[in-house]
Length: 323
Image (tube, rainbow, N blue to C red; front, side):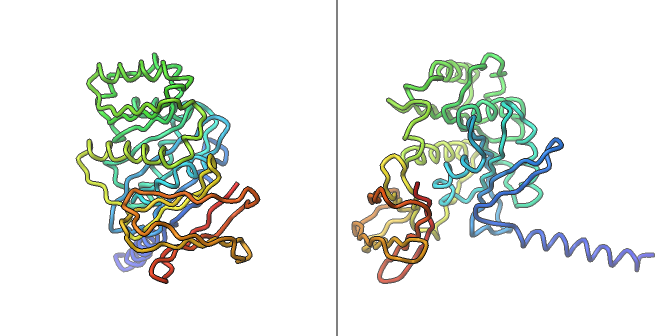
C-alpha cells in the first residue's frame, strides 16, 4: 500500500515546488471569484522577487469612482523601490471587508508573505474601508496608512483597538474631511495608539499633490514608520538606480535617484516605433532621494520608452504612460 502512496506524494511535492518558483512578478491583474461574481485585483510584485525572502503585503483600497488598477498605478512609484507586494482589489461597496481578507489569504498562499508586516492603505472612501478593517481585525495587520480618508462615520469605529496597530494619516489642510481626521487623530492619541499625522498645507481632497513625488515620499515615510514600530528594518531595492514616472500636474518626466551617483546621467526618450524624441543630460551629482523633472511637450501622448545611460552604458529602461 505504501508503494502506491509514494507516487502521489511525489506529485504533490512537485506541484508545491512548481508554485514556489513560478510566481508572476511586475504589474498584472487577476480575476477573483468573489461572492458569485468576478472581481479584478491589480498586483505589483517586485521584479526581483525571491521566494527565499519574505515580503510585506500592502492592500490598497481605491477611492469611489476609481479602480484597483488606478490605485496600484498611484502607488507604483513607491513600490518600484520597495521590496513589498502591493494588492489593489476593485471594490464598489464601502466597508466590504471580505475582499481584503481574500487578498491577504491569496498572497499568503502564493508568495512568501511576511505576516508581521501586512499593511492597509486607502484613499478617500478606500481609506474608510481600510480603517474599518484595521480596527476590526487589528490582530491580523501591522499598520494603516489613510490617504485623505473619508471618515464621515468615525463614531462607529472602536478606537480602543487603535493602540494595537501603527496608524498613519496623510491629509490636506483644505480637505473636505479634515475635521473628521482631526477628531480621529485625537481619539487615537487618547487611546495611546501610535500615530504619524501628516497634514499638507493647502492640499484638498482631490489635488495634484497625490500624483507627484512629494506624496510618494510622504507615503514611504508612513510605510517606514510602521516597519519601525514593528521593530523590523526594511530593505529597499538597490538594483534599480532610478524611479521614473510621469508627473501629470507639471506634464513632465520625474526622475528620482534611489542611489547616489556623481556620474553624468543621459536620458533618451523614444516613441513606440523607436523614433528618437529627445535626449537630456542631468546633473552630474544626484544624491540619493534627489530628483529632477524634464518637461514633456504637450503633443507627446501614450506610452513612451525612456533609456537611462551612465558611463556610456544603458543601466535602465522603462515604459511610461504619458496622458
